[in-house]
Amino acid sequence: MHPRALLLVAVGVLSVGAAAPLIRLAHAPPVTTAFLRTLVGGLLLLGLATALRRALPRGGDLTRALVCGVVLGVHFALWFASLTMTTVAASTVLVCIQPVFVAVLARMVLGERTHARGLVGIAVAISGCAVIALAQQSGTAADPRPTTGNLLALAGAVVIAAYPIVARRVDKRVDTLAFSAVVSLTAAATLACCCVAVGSPLYHPGANWPALLALALVPTVIGQTALNAALKHLPAAFVSGAILGEPVIATGVAWLALHEAPGAQTLGGSALVLVGVWLLFSKRKGHRAEA
Image 1 (cartoon, helix red, strand yellow):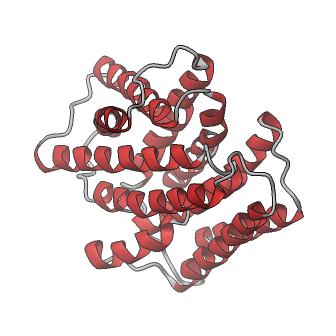
Image 2 (cartoon, rainbow, N blue to C red):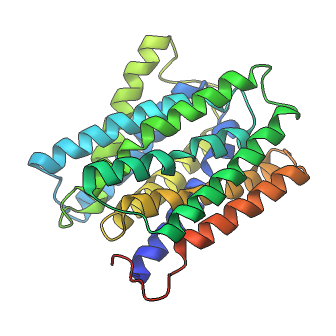
């Protein structure tokens, strides 16, 4: 398996794992936070791509970047709203159930099959996600409507499943920085429309800008770009399945930054997620994954 691609996945998952706690720390309306994250992140990516003289995607690849941006924007609108209604752990694990939908779409659209051990790994990780989500139902949620928040997170998982399928079909010669810049700025435009639709401001004077800048830099510029680059070398279901490790990271960061201490059930569910991710990444005897 491509070592560089595996490193990119690891960097991507670690980076996006910090997103949920940073969203809480931003202290701005959810859709506004999502808009500012993608706008600032997109401008940073565009500036970097321009400075390095990277060509923007064209033709069909540009269309795919725009589609990915719209998908990402809608996903963020749903997920960020979820985080205001339920705990970081519950929201993150539910939004990360996306590998189920990705595996089905990858088989239908790309003809990519996930090997048996990988499917077992995804199933184990999802069972861990279910354990964590159920644990939150008896705990103290961030809002008295945790069920609505959980459903929004699940809807976000369904929507984002289209992202790796579309991105996987982008020509490998397309520059990742430029592609990520177009995706982020398109997501920002989509979220601007969402802000207008729900009456959320495009700017919030009470926002915590250090948290917003960290949200734009770490999960967006670093995490999103790393995962986009990994999709050039690894199957969509594989990269999506690796994101199941995000809830464990988010729960740990929330524990330290937001004092949302996980209980025994949450810790047990996190252990299952890690076992599932290990099964997904481990090689079968005599099997070579796509490089």
